[in-house]
Image (cartoon, rainbow, N blue to C red; front, side):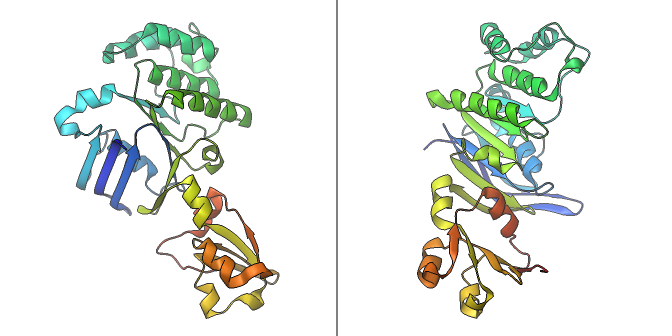
Amino acid sequence: MEPVVELNNVTKSFDGFTLKNFSLTVKKGFVHGFIGGNGVGKSTTIKMMMNLLEPDSGNVSVFGSSYKEREKEIKQRIGFVYDENVFYEQLTLAQMKDIVKRAYNMWDDDLFYKYVKTFQLPLKKPIKTFSKGMMMKASLAIALSHHAELIIMDEPTSGLDPIFRRELLEILQQLMMDGEKTIFFSTHITTDLDTIADYITFIHNGEHIFTKDLNEISEEYAIVKGGLELLDQETEGAFVAIQKSSFGFVALTDHKCEVEEMFGETVLIEKPTLEDIMFFTKKGEPSHVQLSS
């Protein structure tokens, strides 16, 4: 499958934080979710994908080329949707469109007006009067109106109400129908990815924890609940992390089949959410979490 973005052993250091030997491949025609808590390296990674930051070491390739070779051509093919307003607030959406369109060779006015109508956006009201949901729709309309092949979204649903979040996800699903677009969707609201993501990359404290498709996650990971009497040195080794209380234990495993064989029907096995995996999987930190009762 053709890669749209490749990061190979990328490192970027700031005071008190380092993105360490990070590698990532984003495949064409899929929705790639990028999850992790706040401050773990998601925005740093995106800025390097956008050539807003240069890595200290390693390589970044987009559409098979480096920014040093073809920066202008690469950026023509990317649409960016950001959590915060990047427009001139005193301007109307129509005025903002006239400014932005000059930067793109493939700008399509007809497509822009189609999305404005679909999203029910006012063209002649100042952008400063837009709600956060309207601002997100305006960002998406502009990102799509130059026929972008890669849509990079940095926390696009943060702060949005549940109704608009669902509406936005439906819009993204429709965009993927032709198989020509790729969406890279960074978020800490993991439920947004349950219905639309094909692949998930999990990053924690600047380290790559895993990249898997959703089916792999369902097959490998499980939440396990049982009594403390079932735990010993051998059985605890089957878990990524464990919560213990006077009522029993709750644990995450990334070896679901082995745990099913080991415990049989003495434990309750449930499908984990991505949030469960984020909570339990803390590479480089203590592997067992003891909770008070």
